[in-house]
Length: 487
Image: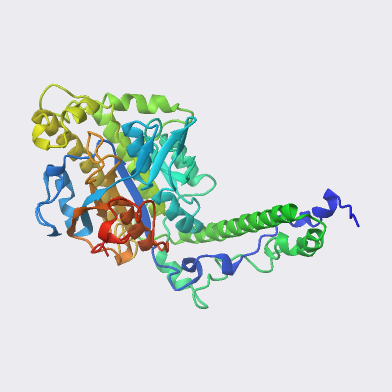
């Protein structure tokens, strides 16, 4: 018998659309478990253009870090807070891509194959987005991707065919981070002390059970009708209904979490954490077009440096305020000029220097251009080191922000000649104590960069045994998808 049903019948109970329950079982262990109140582990990526000059970047021997090579020397103060990794490679194939596009698409994905088809880019999910799928459940923003990206450089993929755009306007980044909320520093000690009942949020932080708005789920109200309705639907429509109900449940869960987070934010504003909040200065005015911000950067290294500092400060602020725990900062441009930074020869154009100063055999490269490239990469490292120092000085109640972070400092190419062997990799921070530091981890045999991403995801609580081409790369060899000695 055909049973007619109306939209009114399906939506009966829609007056409870704001009924947002607090689903305890659907929240990550860190919200409810024994880790409540401890500073969380953050994951940051600071990626530059042009690779590196290997002989001025790579330590001479594996093991404990002694004297750092010239490019890494600005990080001397953090020698015991960092790990240098050498011998990592990307082996992914490409189709219909130029060399820059090829390098950029494999950069954070470790994909076995990347391509462009019909003007659309294809790779694999990137390591930052894979991390955000887990860590992003616990913050106002699942992840942030900022800096100079796009065109030939596309690093982050939410899915194999979904490129994540990067925001280059610092004003828009700040507004996105704090729209509707006041910046504040979480008091992790207070949160630990106020956690009771086996790690559950206290009544101050959790939504009130007596509140009519937080009493019952929308799904709870319509579930009986949905079951009745399901009998009237074909298999395809039943699947659509299940997808709809799942989506509503996910939205409710997310909104419930955001409400509980807002309650915690208010408590932190009244009793903030020990570190001083450093808000960015000299943000662009509202409505400033992006070209007006970025165009001068290629001509003026001092303005370029100020821009990189501002974007790095955004990352520090986002981590300090627990706005997000996953952030990627893309800096630098192959088209930039570096007068004053480069002090040898006559050429100042980065891309020209990269090609003149790089060769499969360094002895065949132009030595003056190679020295110019070394100066440029030491300049990038100096700016990264300033960020590391700021994080090292931010107290989170017995440990620093740097202690509770893992920062990947790298480049989308191994060298300025589009190389994909022996990438520059520095890990700064200790990932909450889970990461060894103060040593050079060297792989004489080529190891897939994707293996590093497996290790990082595991450090961040993402249970995976493979990522990208960690098991299928021609470099996989004896590594079994891992990087022995990292943790």
